[in-house]
Image 1 (tube, helix red, strand yellow):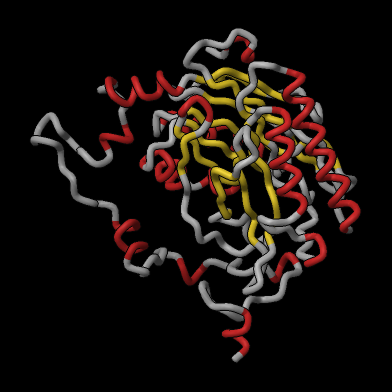
Image 2 (cartoon, helix red, strand yellow):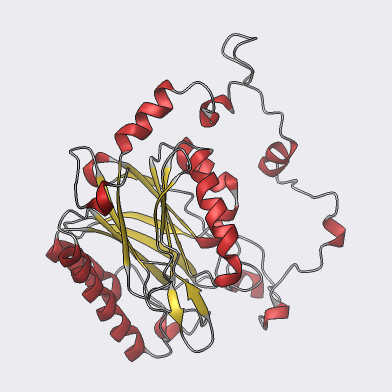
Length: 338
C-alpha cells in the first residue's frame, strides 16, 4: 500500500517525499546562504516531481553538514533568513516541508532543531532534539518535549531527530500524544544502517504508527551518509525504501492515517500502545494500570541509575575533542561562571 509511490492518490492518503539530500560542506555564511538556496530549489523539485505530494522531508544536517561546527556565524534562528526562505518555498510551491537547522542558543551550546512548515508558510511544529548523538554531537539537549500537530489532510504528525529514534520511549511518547505519522530525520553514516532499519520498523509496529525516515546521502570528502529513505507502515512493513544510495533522490509513498486510526481502534492482538497501560485485561477489568517499570519511576524521580553506572567509561565528549562541560542542565553559561 503506497499508491505507486503516491502517483495514485486515494482520498484519505497523505503523500510523503523523503529527500536523500547530498551531504554538504558548510563553513561560512556564504556557504550557508548557498545551501539554503539549494534546499529551496529542492522544494521546487519535489513539487515538480510529484504533483500529489503533501509533505517533503529534508534530513537532519541538510543545512549545516556533518562538521559539528558551533561557529556562531553559521548558526540559525527562527526569525533568520534561512527559515524565512523555507517558509517562502513552502508557500510558493503549496507544499508542507520539514527542515533542519542548528539553532543559536545564547545560554549554552546550540540546539539541533527541526521545523515543520505548512503550505502557507507558517511554522506548525518546532522541535529541539532531545537526545544528541553523544559523545559525537555537541548540541544542547532539547527542552520542548515532543510536539504533535495536525498536519496535511488532518493527520496527526510528529518529528524526532536521528538518535532520538534509538530510544523506544521517543516513538511511544509521540504515539501516546496521538501521532499517526512520525518523521525521523538523520545524518547517519553507513555503520548505523542495520540499526536504522530495524528501529524504524519497531517504532512503527510497537505503536501502530507510520514512520517516515530519511538520512543525508553521499560524501562530503570525510563522511559518507547513507540516504536510506524509508517509509514504514503501522504493521512494521516497509512500503518504500531508498536502497540505491543515490544523492538527491526523493523517495515517495502514500500513507493512510485513517487506517492507523482504524487499527488503533479495532486491533486486539498486538495493540501494544493500548495494552501497555491495560495489562491483562482479560483477567481483570480494564487491565492493570500500575507502573511496574523501575526505570520509569526512577527517571521521573530524578534517580535514574544503572547497576553498572560506575563502570561506564564515556560520559562526556572529551574523546571527540570537546571540552568537558562545567554547567548542569538548565543552567546558563553565565550562571555556571559565577
